[in-house]
Length: 465
Image (cartoon, rainbow, N blue to C red):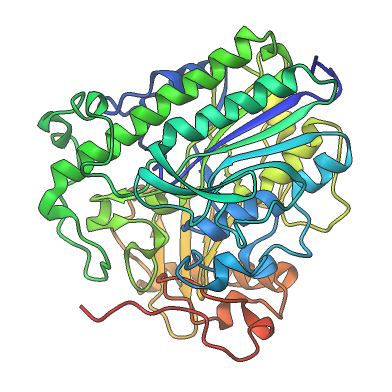
């Protein structure tokens, strides 16, 4: 059986558009997530885990490759109505941690969303490939790639992704090689109304609105569901609880097969989400210009392997998606020979040793020409070339309600943060793919970035309101 002590099995569960606030274990009394909470109780939950870009495709590519968008070239969600998803393999030439795992004896399986180019083609070391053709959409009738063919699944896609993942686990449990499995849900991404099993919808009534933000619409808003706020929030929570039930199915299966003691389970989301916070209904592209509020860039992050890492712990260390690849490889005794921006936080997982070993504690984020540098006490957002820019004193204003960028007394800290931001991206960006020179709007990417785009306009624009 797959019980190599030096090479534990790995299951990474990745959700879509789940705010860090949308879990019971994160202190939300409204949303029902008993199995995610159960996973957190058996491992470490990171309360300050940040995506590298507050939209799905670039954030997912960064988790897999350990690179920032300005290194791998995916700067926005990939427009599935064009050949970006049917013909272009965006991560060709970039090494995913699954490539390294596969080269070292792991059998790698994907069940669910890919959305990083050419979904019809198994890539990055995956030998099992049950992928969503487009990356998202209706929860019934989802277009999937199964055994190399396109099929339209009649059932509820959250359940079907789990079914496929469980079959993969059962098969690999009988094999000698360790396995890696991505369970990539489309939940809880929209659509939310009339899309989810009624049993989960009925769990939520209008009381969920009592503690939910009732802010006026942000002046830069690109999406507004406030007219049906309750129905959309009800569907959002229902999609999470339905997904949570499937997380429980995965944990139960691993335990029933006797594999739990040799299986690391990770639970993450690609990016955060505002559901009225700051008057935004959406993520980083819920506004134009794009935003970098913590509700957009913070994501759920739980890692559990009883007996090997700490249990029932909450870490407030500042961790980024670009740290995930080095950590996962470190966990199984492997490494990448690339010069990557991230660092392993394995010592935090195993021993509670604080991971804040950088010269100073900083998290970097980007969405095309919008870049963020965040410390514990400050956040600075720079929009190339002309702004507007933002500065928040998080120690005094954790809700990011007061932009102090124009206050003279904060000019020195703004200069310091801007200098650090520039230096970091000069060090790590690929000048051929640098996002500060890309006309990213948040409305989608249709082709390769930078000089690989050969002069084409590859970014969609928002329709005028």
